[in-house]
Amino acid sequence: MLLVRNLARRKLRTALTISGITIGIWALVVFGSLAAKIDSLVTGAHSYFGNRVIVSSEAGGGGMFPLPISLVGQAAIIDGVDVAFGEVDTMIDHTAHQIGLPDEMVGFVQGADAGRDDFPYRYAAGRPLTAADEGHDVVVLGASIARNNDSRVGGTIRIRDADFTIVGILEPTLTVPDSQAFMPLTAAQRLYVKDLPPDMAGNLIPAQTITHIVIYPAPGVDVDQLAARLQTSLPKVTAVTAKEFDQTIGSMANLLSGIIVGVGLISLVVGGLSIINTMAMSVNERTREIGIKRAIGGRRRRIILELVTEAGLIGFIGGSLGLVLGVIAVTLGNQVGQDSGTVLFSLTASTALSALIFATVLGMVAGIVPATHAARLDPVQALRHE
Image 1 (cartoon, one colour):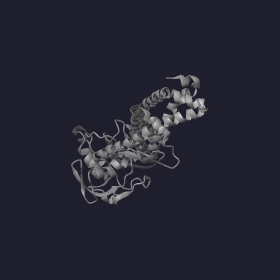
Image 2 (cartoon, rainbow, N blue to C red):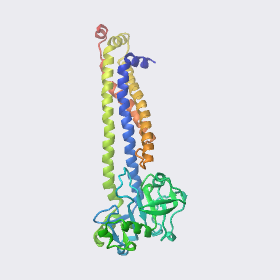
Image 3 (cartoon, helix red, strand yellow):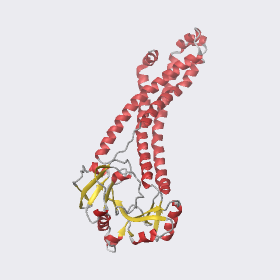
């Protein structure tokens, strides 16, 4: 109660100081949740990528440029290749402006991976595609696409001006498959070639066209060396491994996360400076009180502890309010984003707890200098202070 009474002596000043910490923690929680979401997407994408090698046209990835399906046979006989198959993997709408993972359509012959794809797909409803689905317009939807389109098994969804019957819906994976629509290869080839520029599509036969070759290495084969052999042996292609994915996408994500968290930390530094100012003014106003405590035998350690604890309480109160506001902001942001197909924040218990502890510790650290100064006051001089 003594600490609360001391803070209540200057209500406006204390409230303004707490507000500074509150804003800083709010920013740290929101930006930290955004950084955590980015990290989870990168980690999940790495897991989804696995030990595969993805071969695409050297003209560019993203499914924009076609490859002849004959390259699959050439890739399959290269030393170190265990399984090779072609697929069509491209954005459903190249004109859409979407934050996060874009919606994609993915077509390949079911079972072509020979059981090498070990990503844990789980079905919320319906069934997986089978080889017997080739030639039919059926689709399995990722969780995000299904939610955004209010889709149900047995219903239909329109993809690139074609109606597909929904036979399965995946459970959320929090990574790439959530925004993918899986369909038979023949259906994906037809839609892909149809929407290519006329000068490009005129020279292509859908059944002989793919966008990527998926390669699984034989046991014990070095993935990076295999990727180099594929690029050397196949004409005008580029091969990407999970390691290269991490180096490009991962480094960009780490940079973005660092910038985001940095903004939050800058806000907290400002809050910390306000605590130092508040505690310094408090010490000045309570100089006689501190002198009396020192004169009757109060130890310097006890005075320091009292003032540091008071500063820590300011940090804790501000941190608690900032955490509450951060949780509200993240929840509302995800709700709004969910309605538009984008979930931006991932607030974890560790992020919330770390923010609260950081605010408390920041307050205590900020109070050390004023508290030390107060403890060093000469009792006689302090008693004469007006």
